[in-house]
Length: 490
Ligand code: BG6
Image 1 (tube, rainbow, N blue to C red):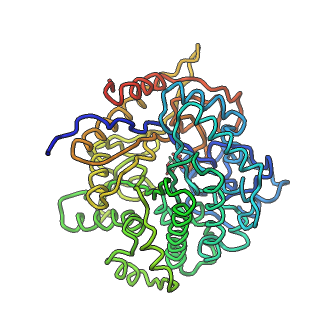
Image 2: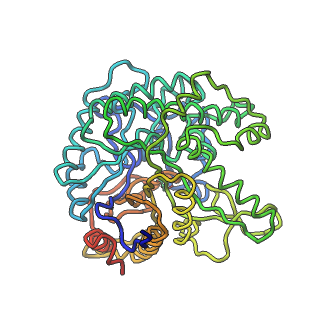
């Protein structure tokens, strides 16, 4: 009865993850509209430490400029690495690595260019038909996010983003359209990528331009509530259209640890962890957790909840829990006393002296993945899916198409080992899609030279290059990992 599992389950979904806004390109092609991600510029003359500023906060002026074609700036996410025209070649490479699954997102703006149309764009739908057929040809299971930082820009400029309840209807129409269309082709869906990221970068997650909001917290919580209801209603539609299919939530999970053993630091780390867990609590359990009242009160937020919302959330929780895990971060109740210990800006927290960091200051903590898996499974008792994990690094292409990315192999190997440990702990995890299996545009910094892939793309931060795909050393390593179902890691 009590048997420790020492292997990855058969049919474990090994694979890689991407998102349309960073990967696909094909902007404006075949009727595609602009999304929130198409507004981000890249300028190599701006100091590196400011590259993620726009991601954290967008201004009205920047959004306006993005609509003005005479304004000459480079918008990397409009181009991605042109999966739109390379999908057959790319999927063939994934198949060569032995991928069992491929995580991708649908560009909402390819199917509903402005987001509020009554009828979908057939050319957009047809594109994804081709992608799914190609994946199916190789027996690769698609895991598809409906929304990965791809809110149609029109829904921001005309409706003010997710703070407006009308967006629920637009999202559900989009969801039902693709469920009907891809029924039988897609089994695993994810409603909102990193739904908790609205706390850190509300423009790309909620379409919220902070200027003009006197009460930003109010807007963030209201936007998140609308996404919760939209996700639950999309799940309802999925169950009606394709009862075999599964809906997952997706949480950005940084593991927060107390900087010291002081009770204050411990309390602070618990609060920070809850910032992420709050979202899972609603989407998995189907109701707001008991601690919500206090959080809202302390932030002076009065959430507008319609009478039917509570029942909708209860009736349609998610089937599985997916999450991204890149790093852990230390938390102190008195960070100002710890000079020079500032951690990663994107997640807050402070530097953990026990851990190394990536070139972008993300602290590498493989054991943190084991803890994350245990925490999430203990809390939710639902199957888990590691939807993202990886290291962004500068790769050097040497003569003869050689890229020795041992640092990447080492990062992934150690994380996979810890995932195996979690399986021995009894955690039910059914898949792992490492982030950016092929190089693409970084979400936070809009550059390509922060590379995650097993496959190198010959392109620089200003979009120059041949876009040729080149296999890195990690390509062959991951192929062996998959072929041996995670047994051969060294
Ligand atoms: C996650 C996102 O936050 O991290 C991805 O879901 C993103 O879209 C990934 O690309 C890595 O972050 P970055 O900023 O290094 O691209």
